[in-house]
Image 1 (cartoon, rainbow, N blue to C red):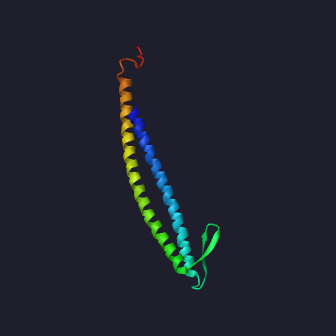
Image 2: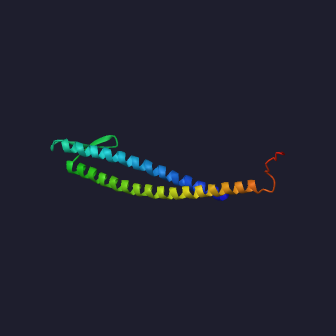
Image 3: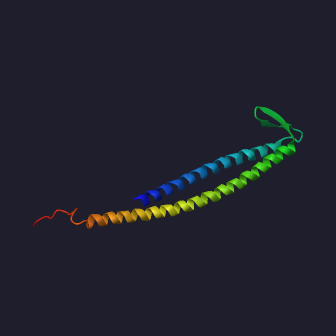
Length: 132
């Protein structure tokens, strides 16, 4: 019975990895939306407008070109991370499906073994006979 437990544990671990990866992707997508919103704000700002960056509790003035470059760089990084996490999700889903099939096959084998023990158990589970 140790083998079924190991397989169920492996399936559980794969599912946990999948959940973690999905949460990471959601967080990255949220950051991506926020950065795109900042890009849109940059596009509607007047060229002479002041841009400030929050560093800890302090607002520091920042050059427009630096701010735009920082946001663009952040978006590139986020997009690459999303792709990496999506590959991880696909890989984990594939492994999870494989583990599910192994568990299903194991369950089927165990059920067949239990039925075999129940039917051919040397008279332990005989049905009562009705006399005519």
